Image (cartoon, helix red, strand yellow):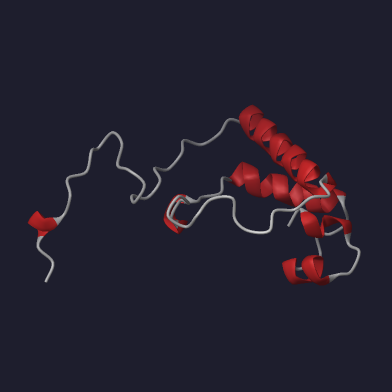
Length: 108
């Protein structure tokens, strides 16, 4: 029995953690290339680390909801470039995680 009056008011400037993310403006080619390069560097650093976390860094109440966790096209192109550089573009995520000794399993 949803009553609109029972819902909290939402600040249009800062809708808070429960609201969906606002769409981003398209990136310029230069900005997209820079974002892609940052993604590759991030994944390279994760792949190089020996120590792994045993559980999520944030508790569930502190994490963003799934509707707020988005991926930009630049991030997706960066992930593609990273796996292509390591010859893993044709592998599924399950193959990467389950393949014994595969060096990128830590970055996935």
